[in-house]
Picture 1 (cartoon, rainbow, N blue to C red):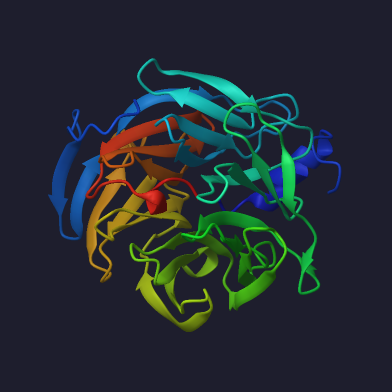
Picture 2 (tube, rainbow, N blue to C red):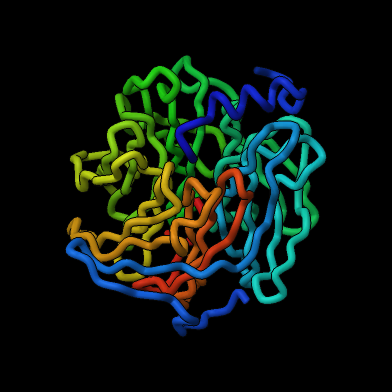
Length: 339
């Protein structure tokens, strides 16, 4: 999620939204424009459609959490959607249409991902420190987790699942104060056992397992770095180091996705672009929208079609919330499908 949660969530509160404060496996390029630079290729993503306009109630729209369901249909969340407007949408990328899946009166959902354990869609509610789950079709909203963690409420941003269905949450505490209070929190798949795996992180944002589930890639927004957390067989952190320092200029590190070849897709807040690295930190490419399209400020996340390489990137700004597409370096897996 982006750098501006406090202002946007304050806007939601002011209007009463918050009560408390085709997708196929096609691998063709479809017109992707590629050029070379000294720091890897530049890939120009192609516009698919505009999904949302700026909401008058909140003054923003912010698309996040693109994820495919088991039938290959794409779902997206709108973080700043007010009550009554779609907060979770299902998108038909071929017909360029969307329909509402879920709305409510309070949630500010910053990520979405399907659990390998129960098949439900899990959403992180940044504003209320909760994790909510839905069925893919009917909704059936349930609060999976709510409450304090080690005495402090979370600001849960992104989410990753291990193979057993346990949740790993990037807790973006300290963002408004620009202090290193961020954490990585593990929640057992039954919602009961909660453990802080890492703390004193700089506004934890993106989170994704590597290909073999041996560690977690974590983006720290206010330090523009990607850290790597090595895990043991019980999911506990055994080592932690700075893996990549992101030269983002005015942009900052947002969500992370990982493809089947282990490549990292680092989204940027403050620039409608993503940077692609291999697992050794080599910069492979920058994915841009055409001509840095007017009114688009951030690329928050990407989903790659499972088993294919067609990637769909969520991009937002004063011009609205958009989907853009490009051809990924590797095939889509769970680690590049939501979060």
